[in-house]
Image (cartoon, rainbow over all chains, first blue to last red; front, side, top):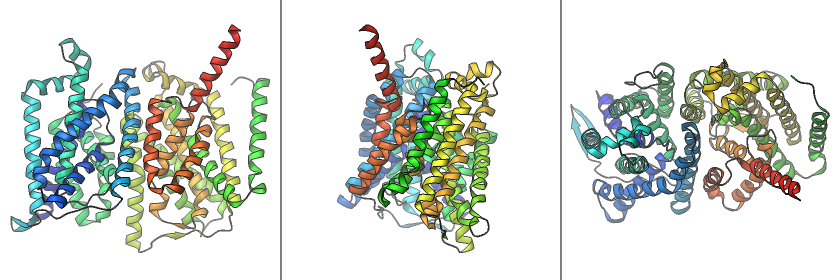
Length: 288
Length: 313
């Protein structure tokens, strides 16, 4: 029971991060390997505001999200737009995007190391116990989970119901035909990319309330988000949420029962199983 | 296979002479130069074998550190039980088998899956070994041998010669021809009856085996072996950068990238040890935006320009 709830709480936060990556990879078609660094940056801003002036991370989110949106918009326009324009095929774009975002991720880590050093950063916010079904949990985990659920829900509604959400889904399903019905594909892709970055940074701010981060942990979160996105199916919001909860459960189970050092190894094994048996994702239909 | 032209014989002879000159390095220079020499030889072997696979197929492999670490552990564990010379082939076979398994799982799918899979591989093996050590209560392994830096250098040089020879032979074989078609258009390759998955898996076994052997050769240099050291993910990225910086289109391309990058890396890590990550990042961006074909591309373009101007004169 204890493991189950802790796992679900963790999985909820993972869902938010993976949702950010899914917007970038599934919709904007950019495999963003600098995603984890965006998360760490979000976490760092939350840390800075909390230790500097005691501003609650739940409020900082409202500052982090627009800032990350603007930053990711710029990244798309400056770095990735030219690649999209010059790419002759999807594969070419993929290779270029991977190399570029790796580069950006290293630059981000290097800058963070230069300015803030390589120390771990953590702070205690809302670390009061909460009782659920007789066991105790940190209030910060519950708060992060509830915020994640709220944001994921809003995002899902927006994607499913609004006109802008529909255009984003359109470029994800058929980028070539989307142009025929008057969608500005490049602008919409930039919007999806920026939104994905904002969601990830928000996730980082939330996750920093209960996990310890440092400048170079980003890549681990990138890896986990990638595993979730692929497990859930690229571009599939519902699949992402289910996969994130599954990964949260699995990690908590492995950490409790076997060894806390093996969480990434467990995520990796899960990834191998998915690749071997359902490479199209949990709910995806096989493509011919 | 076609017969060798006089030009091919000339190139082969030139390569042999260059190798012999390189082999004289330990005899003539000091310890520092030899250390740099070993580093360059190591990255040349790794980057060249990496480019053999990734050049034609455009799959970016980040598994170098995983194979390298496994190779280092083969020497670390095996040295107490087996004679040294048997360890290198054992490491090679293990590396090739690992690469074949990775290839079977991922090479049927798109390139992104392959990148993620190989990125996670080194971390996975590292966590697994750390866990086994925690259970069994051992920490690291001491690798105590009589092997000197010069021996390591010569072994690496021999391996480099082997890799070049192999790459040259593959380029002339049916497999090499198939790979060039796959690189141009995989669909066309499949339609013309090439078993693309098999060709890619076969080729991926080359960098797997070579990186494992390199790890096995270099293990004595570390003296004390622990997972964080043997499986450092930085190694995979450095190899990718050096190979791409040089250019993967030619067999000698990676070498052109390895030499300047090694000096740059040594210089930066000596004076600004915290800025190596930043350097890696900037190099990635330079490769994508300024040097998409690497130094080889620059050299080829310069050559073409020279030939054209001669033609007009």
